[in-house]
Image (cartoon, rainbow, N blue to C red):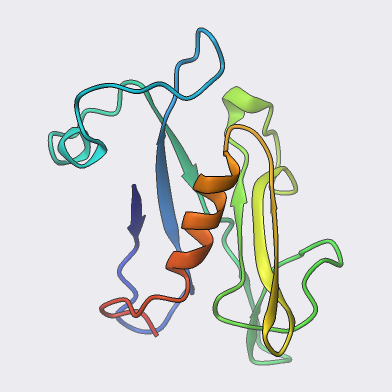
Amino acid sequence: AIRYDQNVLGRIPNAMTVFIPFSHDDKQATLTSETLASKLSNNRLDGLVQLRTAQPIWREKINSWTLDFEGRVKIPSKKNFKIKCPTEFGGKQDTDWVMLFGKVTKDRFCLDYKAPLSIIQAFSIALTSFADKLMVT
């Protein structure tokens, strides 16, 4: 499940929280009969890992949001984002990430991911950046 932060004033593009099912015991995704939506609506986060997007930095000099994509992303876009690695997977600083998505040419994007995300989860998260979102500019 993905929750986008409200972006009423056009600040901080693609600020989101991603929730994925996970068991800390065996370090892999778990399946239950309860849906993610019902868990989130009841504010029950047990068995879920929360992943947050890295906050871009506003640069007055270039009048744009910036984020270090380690040379992988070539073109500025509001669709570009990076998801930070949670501490339970060794994330210690802002340079630790589990997913990187960004524009490399006019019509091509790169998608890098690592555990705890699967390819399907990473691709699904990336696709949401193309959707029209209420109050997101």
